[in-house]
Length: 252
Image 1 (cartoon, rainbow, N blue to C red):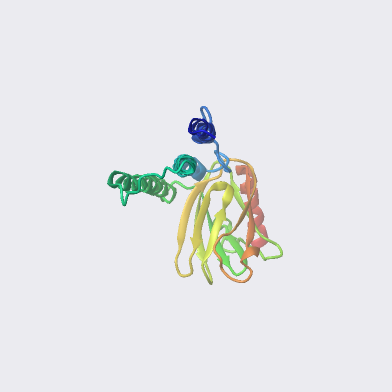
Image 2 (cartoon, rainbow, N blue to C red):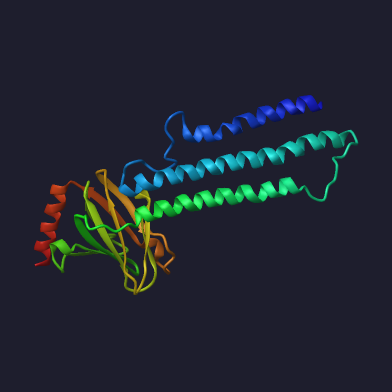
């Protein structure tokens, strides 16, 4: 195959790849890339960072792929004719570019991650409800102080508990652990925070869509780690208040 034909082949190969960022972003709206927009207040903050990281990764991947394939094709064509590319020990401009560009990418991602994180963990005095989340080997315990000190839902590996939360109202979650490090994780809500023994963490967020969502521990906490499951059930405010009344009665 001639060098000209190889050039045309490479262009045909690279052209679709250069469209990857556009395919990821769509014409006017970026894909959630596995996450649904608007499920929680954390999604509203985190989703753009998640999308941006994938788009940046796609651009870097396309450029890297082209830089690998280009010399592999054209230098091979020259080698077949007995022509070998010029050998150089170093190329200062290229090496500087290869150092600065990744540094800029990491710095930008770090900046936006720090900004988003500050918004997610921000504490306010405007939350409407409070729930305590206690992780233990090998399940979860959810306490509802509004319903009294004995309003506690405790799960087991055989019967994972349900975390009931109201739609559209901010809840402060107090995160605790009685034994080892666990990870309170609600994948659909883009939320994860560690349950640390001897340390009390807290997180505030609002669930924005009715439904049930899986939750689990995402920190390897021991032998039965995989059984530390729970369900998040988002209900109307009226249903949530009725649920609190049910807990009061059962705790009496």
